[in-house]
Length: 584
Image (cartoon, rainbow, N blue to C red):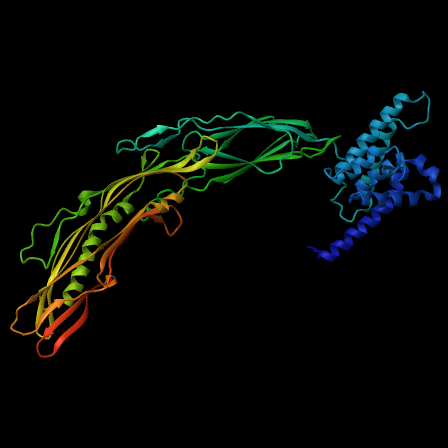
């Protein structure tokens, strides 16, 4: 197969243009024999001037140049620059018209001028009649077709036919959303579903070019999930070139559909929401406040954009942002943990009820349950993670105390209570579509009573040391947000310092141990935070909980009658992370 590069193609096209231009002398001479006979030897030069003027007003194809030269045969070369042809000058200089449209309107106006003059002409005169003008134009079209068949380098590229009026008059549209859309509403600790207000906007008519794209937000359901929204269209044509126009094209995630001609007069187009992505059972659905991005669907109504007079409408386009009307809900209940003590007694008590018995997590979408195993498993792992953190704390404490004196009693319950959250795209009173997020949080974020005791040894001197920290944090909040950005503020933080007590133990040594003053930064505390934070994958928010111990120090003072007063700073507990948890 022969392939031409860019330079070769340009040379071929230049040769084609030169050959066709030479042919126009004969074509126009046959269509306008009286003009060619009158000009005689000046005829080729007249055609060249007409073609040059046609290129000056933006015409490019040989066929359009020939049609413009026909008008020059009627009115004279460069007629639009001469007096009494102000109408032609206005059309040639109108920036709203394309070169092809200028030529069409110049031709149409020329014929109207001939009709007007024919009405005033004396019977039997020699002035060109509208019928004679039509005959000349037809002869030009026939001559162009003959020249193309006989001399064209590309035999499969005949000249484009002379354009005819084809344009839109107006487009009327309205969106009808499905009935029966519902959303979750918090009510006395429950989340019943309530009907959303119906949205039925009045039809809108477009009869002028749009300065900016027309974007229409839509609520709908995915295909196969019930009734979906529909776009009602009424297309009025100003003129039509035939069965190809007007043309309506709808493009969506599902593909592309087209209607042409009389089929476009009235249409009812389904606007299906994008299908929900499959849920990975290992991770569960998207997080709290995640709004599935809308499907951008376009509906384009087009024509040739040719009018006999005036600026054409050409084509009109609508962009629909189709949001899934799916509403989601998550409900969580989480119980308190039992008090624990270390080291374990020789005969341990009966095992407490497992966390699963006091933990529940329920997910649903539009009243239908969704896989919640991954979220439930994460919530069931919060209390075991707290126990593991306390175990780590006791081991660190045991390393700092003398012998087997270390003891720890702990009550640690994170996120005790219940919470619910619902979210989904909903219609706002002003007609926009926004992601609405509601949440009702009723948690005791922290119940903490931690007591550590043991003995410290320094050169034979001993002291009994006791550390204690207590705290309680409530997290109760009601949220009603437009958009998920406000969820970043749904969080809580706290800090509970340790209290320290050191008592000397009589061991027979003359030196005694006591505690000295210590800077605030060295006394240590239990710090934590909880709330909602964006998921790493960007799909909504997840619950999180973090609890840590800041390093705890003690300033020991040893009063020895022989050596004198001694001071020593000792770390009792290093920096530890007790809980670093997330769910959803």
